[in-house]
Amino acid sequence: MTLYGQDALLFELKKVKQKIDDFMMPIAVISSQFRDKDAFVFDQIHIEVARNASDDFNLFHDKHKWLQITHNPFKGPIVMGFQLNTLIEYQMRIYREAHHENKVIHENDLRFSNYQITFVNAVRPKMPVYLEIKKTLINTIPNLTLANRISMKSDGKTVLLGYKKETQTPLFLADINLDDLPDLNEIPDLTIVPGSPYFLKRKFMNNGSVKNFLSGSLAEQSDYFDELTQVAQYPEIFPCSLTSGALMEKAQLENHDFKRNPMVYTSHEISIDRHQLAKLKNNDVLNILVEQLPESDDNTLNRTGIRVRTYRCFGLMENNTELFRIRMNLVPLEEILKNLARK
Image 1 (cartoon, helix red, strand yellow):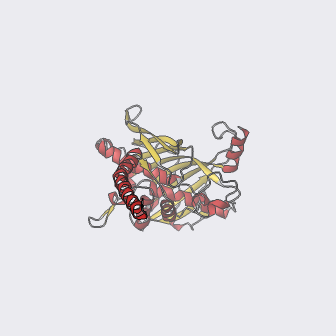
Image 2 (image 1 turned 60 degrees about the vertical axis):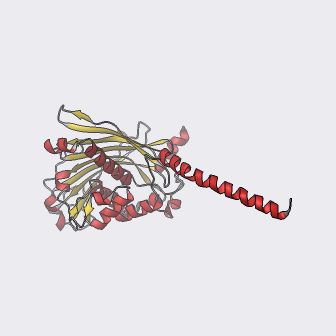
Image 3 (image 1 turned 135 degrees about the vertical axis):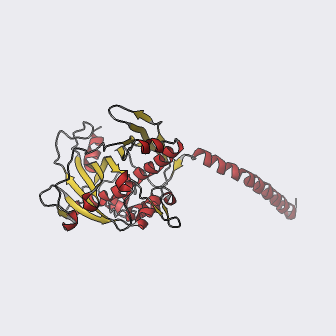
């Protein structure tokens, strides 16, 4: 066979291969979409946008500084807990609308939205995340409650477990009375409120930050904000997310070493008053109160002996009107790693 003939044959073979590739490509795309049609994927830019919007400077989420954390087991930045909470909030919003449950919530004045979340593992960028929302259970005793069990998985591991509940009264920290507080707007930022155990962090609402946080949490911002129709509905989790930055500023003032002694969340328990949330708007003041409870051998992580550090946080609007109540538990990363090594 001449060189010309070989070239001609190769040319024809390449054309056949290209036709096969052109045929197979749509099949591969369809197969990929089918396989991951229920997956959510966070990229590093989502983390950057969300942490900037909420002023969270935790090293675990920083694309460079995660390397500075002593014995960091995650081998890279991880998604913020409040990002995952916001993803849950948005998907629960879709679920409620699809099942016509908002009517029940409205007619029965189930004004409190409650999240009970236990964190089991971390979520890494580019790893598919799968959220499962169980069918709504309606309880009437002792009071009417809409409840959904929630689970999230990534990389074949459970990421978090918990519940989303709608109630007439807050489920968490309901027994804490804040009526005797002074006018918080008169108290200097980043100080202890006189006559109380509360550290004060003052924040100002900003619509742009909220939109960015929604987008960074894989929620559709246009479902909350539309300038053309003058709609601006604040999501539930964003104001709560500002507590992470408040905790870090408190720790920074106490000279906590974030590199040598990092802390990780083990749980969030959140109650938000939707009536007050509906009043929240751009430039509003939000005073965040943080109380750190004494550590105790009676408060440990799943009977491991690891002491849990518990924070009680409150978000107060104008005239000390309560927006949210949160109980957050954290443990030192070092203690978790020691416990795993013993196993």
